[in-house]
Image (cartoon, rainbow, N blue to C red; front, side, top):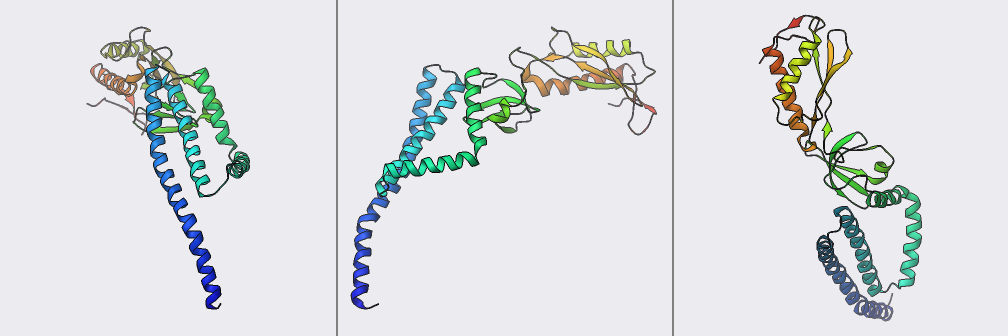
Length: 274
């Protein structure tokens, strides 16, 4: 390559850089500040919806949807500044959307399920629910997923498609839930006596609702003892606290009334410790 050709290519590169680099810088700036503006607009939109007293589920869903739409608009504006035409971009996006849609049908299903949850409201934010065998309080309902917080303070992200394809148990619609607990008693012990001891223990807990009354009954028989079911009603917010308290009260009641249980190591009956 001689100096003349090199000078020609250098001049073309310089001319291209003079035209393209400012556009690229401007596009990056628009993309950067545009995303910040979108974030602020989403907060403003959320505040407006809160003042309008729209359901929080609808609010979160609409805010998420608007956020995505505004981000796409910012991206399209940035791309057009660099030199992409809108018609070309829409064509690319349409083709990409079709291809991605085929590959990610689950996401589209989650989106449709999110709309179903928002409009039919099987649960709302703050409800205690059981979905796909998991129990927790609904923290948020988003476009593609529902977020639960378990009594153990774990956050569970469940795809909305899985929610609508499974059984939903909403404990908050009735305002109370029934916990399912188990204790054991020896075969030689009197069940009416054990039932009375347990019922008296439950009365001592302020977390146990007395209406409807707790239910105590024989659930099953195993090789060493009788399995006794304890079914008290509680408020959903007291789930773990009430569970632990009931077990502690029953253990103390068994000790005070000299009720023995069979240890798992064998059939020998042992005393109840502190």
